[in-house]
Amino acid sequence: MKKGLRPTRNQKKAMDTYGLNPANWLVFKKINGELHLVHRETGSTKIIPEQ
Image (cartoon, rainbow, N blue to C red; front, side, top):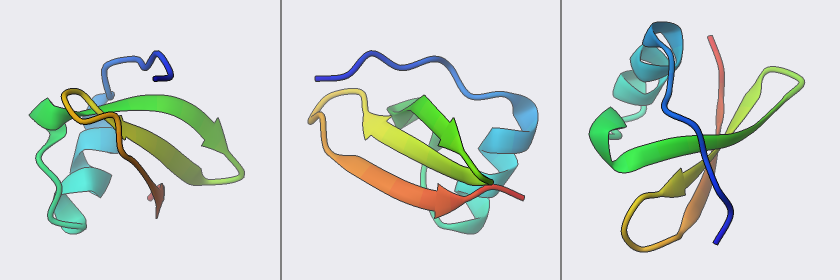
């Protein structure tokens, strides 16, 4: 599993718009306006656009 960082306020807002709970997701990569997220418990990944 990749290590992640806690999301910032703006990143949390982006997660909320996609129906994700920011308490469960960590940011492990930020590339070209995309957030690469990893779930804290399961280790699954998602990619969402950053606002």
